[in-house]
Picture 1 (tube, rainbow, N blue to C red):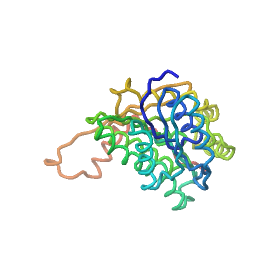
Picture 2 (picture 1 turned 180 degrees about the horizontal axis):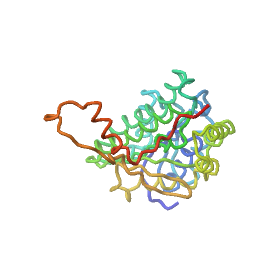
Picture 3 (picture 1 turned 45 degrees about the vertical axis):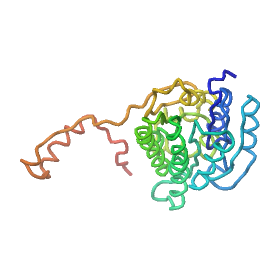
Picture 4 (picture 1 turned 90 degrees about the vertical axis):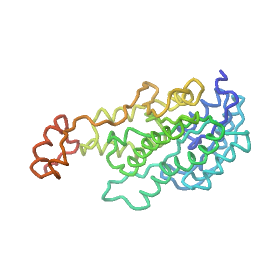
Length: 312
């Protein structure tokens, strides 16, 4: 154990399996105490099983860290408060929050149910809010904290066909990260995010891979994107990236979204206006149809339609 997080206390959601488990173990390896949060449900968000969280808590203790489990639903505001409260009550304070919990209910938008939408948004986006809302209050008072969220390149449309709920949630998490970072930075609290590429039970499940293959056939995903997904390294290969962002060494890193895998570390530049045309509305009045038609070719000079009409 290197001990670079000795004395720090962390809450990790979705920590019973996959990326969350790898992050919890990386933090414990560096000396942090862990609240392992996981309801133990399916990848679709149903059912409860205490065993995954209990097992990971045991694994964390093997590094010499203190660890306890919590089995609540991150989509529940009160349960989120309980997770943060358990860290403070058990270890004395909360220093680190890693929002990893997620589920997947893929459907094309014209087949998606309200429940599929609400549950995915609830776990990913509202869950990230719930935990951050309660953690940030404590972190603000102590003027220290590290928050790392999990977004996805799917919100940019990469591999996102059939996942409008997931993409919307992950896009919201990226925007949420930027906003929280700006609100909390002056209190010594950083907020960053990763877009991971890792082989987990959610990304490598047979039905998930079959869905990706169908998207390639339908032209919704490029073959190279598919190959990247199916050959993703295990999450243990990239977990130390998150641990580093949770450390004193990363105190100057805030409002960043990083691509992370065993093979790669990258930085996502925040969205910017690439080309714009200016006019004087006080002088020229409202936009006319003819003006829009004239200027759009300039504004869209580098644009490529990602989903053109497919001939029958």
